[in-house]
Image (cartoon, rainbow, N blue to C red; front, side):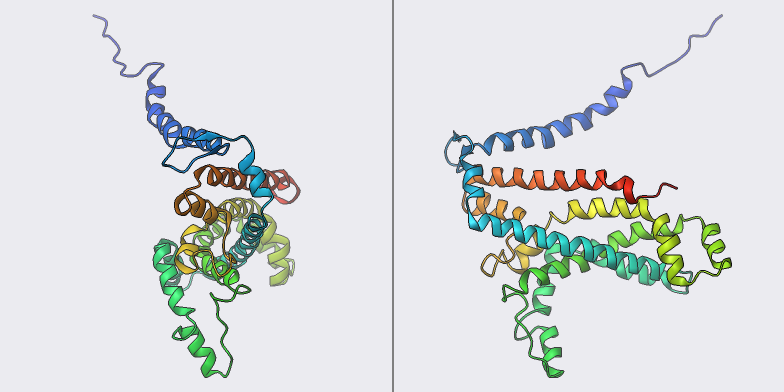
Length: 294
């Protein structure tokens, strides 16, 4: 008697497994993005129905000096964050890429800020950078240095918040660089050592080129991450002083949930989306000029 072959899946089974993800993307991503795109052309205060006003929100944004101040703050914050986080995380990765006793403790300690709540980080650094009772200013005063007003001075506030963001996230990118370093072919490094290459020559001519795919990934993620700068700004400065730390993502919050100008906030959100998209595409475009495929 011929046995019937049991088969629980058919041609449509993979699509059934994909269906929850597709529904999630549509409900929580595509539809909100489409709705926000439409709302960018409306005047809406949450209490009334949206009124279509065409490009008026975009015209208002690009005619506003405050908006250009916000864009400038966003660019400066991103530059400090991306450069700072890549240099610091690579330095950390090189330091902990050693087989030393207790090295796991240092790896965990450097990663700890990443898993700490951004709100808690903001509150603690607010205390550290406080003008009168902040521990940093107390130390500077004992050293005979006149302490600055880190978060109250418009010239220093954005730099201070950016450095704190670098401190918080450097551990995350350190792990990525560490994975890249540990997957590197050691034969190449040993061959460079045999040829008499000095440490800095091995770093610039061997390590960095071999690490370029990881560097490209870290750079792309860091650029996108640099625009997610809401929590620390909210807890440390709330966009002040004098809009010195007001960035695009914080401006979306201010217009949408403080001033109830949701149409204008949606327009600013799309400007932010275009920013991130253009920078990411540029990064992919120049990838072939400096990324070495192994």
